[in-house]
Amino acid sequence: MQDKPSAEKLLAAARAFLNDTAMPQLSGHAAFHARVAGNVLDILARELELAPGFNRAETARLESLLGETGTLKELNRKLCDKIATGEMDLSDEKLKIHLIKTTMGKLAIDQPRYQGYKTAKAKGWPEEDSGETIK
Amino acid sequence: MGELSKEQFEERLGSICTRRFGSPIENLKRLSGGASQESWTFVCDGQAYVLRRNPRGVQTSQNALPKASEAAIISAAAEAGIAVPKISFICDEDDGIGEAYVMDFIEGETIARKILRDAEFDAVRPNLAAQCGTMLAALHNIDVSALPDLPFSDAVGELEKYAGYLKAGGHPFPVFELAIKWLGDNLPEKRAPALVHGDFRNGNIMVSPRDGLVALLDWELTHIGDPMEDLGWPCVPSWRFGQHDMPVGGFGARADMYDAYRAAGGEIDEKATRFWEILGTLKWGIMCGVLMVSAFESGADPSIERGSIGRRASETEIDLLRMLMGED
Image (cartoon, chains in turn blue, brown):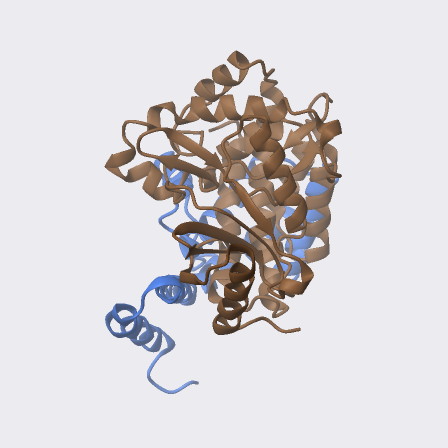
């Protein structure tokens, strides 16, 4: 077990330093990179919070789709092969829901403000599952 | 040779300009943005210039033309009446600043979000999609036999190239596989090869508050291929900068661009433009999720900017899913 402060709190402190201290002193290309660095810290904070549950949910769906077990990467590779050969496509409702939820989960971490993500939500596309009820 | 420091670069550029223009340079500034190459502005003898440069040793855009060919194509486009900056000179090996060329500075805006949001562009924005159509028709009408040697890449070529990058990257992207399958099953009809800009989109056009579209920039991906590629790429959702209901660059309707293209003598194949929109979205996804990540992880470009772009692959996945389900 790691000691305190938690990763979440340390990230928040780094974010506050960037915003409140570093950014006001920067201009031009350095200011641009500082903004990008701030966005990266936000991604990491969301990933720490959401990814463990999302990954459990994705793994469970892949195991059900493919009828086998494995790591997330192995299962995704197998799914890629089945899609590439045409063995599975979007006419398969289970695959469609799986890809939608997985992609919605990536967006919730990477870019929750992306317009395409907002549009999909407005259209009622389901969010990724929290993974808590699955295992 | 390693990458130059800003001081070394400024000193060398200063002596190049002193030799060519008889005057030192002032106000050298790096422009932000431009993930795959650098742009700088400076003043020499009262005239403002832009320098475009591939940093030495960093090849992130694997299909980029040599800077000298890029400059030659820009000059050919100018002769065909296409609005482009005038090329002043091309740097050679002895100049010691890597591959670069210098062109006249043109007054105008290239930052996509400003073009879409700032009130000063309200008057010209509604006409931009049509101006794009007219410009593309003139570009695609250029006689390709008179041009310097350019790479050839059509629908099959581009699809195979990017499918190859994805495979070589090794990271699994099920949505990209789905798009590759669809694209392979829906290849466009072959048509006469044309000069394709290859990066025609909001962000690579210069817009003035008075005249609208005043210059086409960023010619580094120019090739010979299917002209419909240039009509699909500006409609890729990532190039709408948040204005998804305006398919052309976030500023206009497809019909406005198509009508102007036809009025200027071009022929539109809407099945092909759709193919290129989907392939374009896939290409941007693979650039982000595979090529940028590889440049970052290999240490070729360890910047936070390069690394963070990798996480934009997911935006193209959601766009591809929507497109493959017949939306957008």
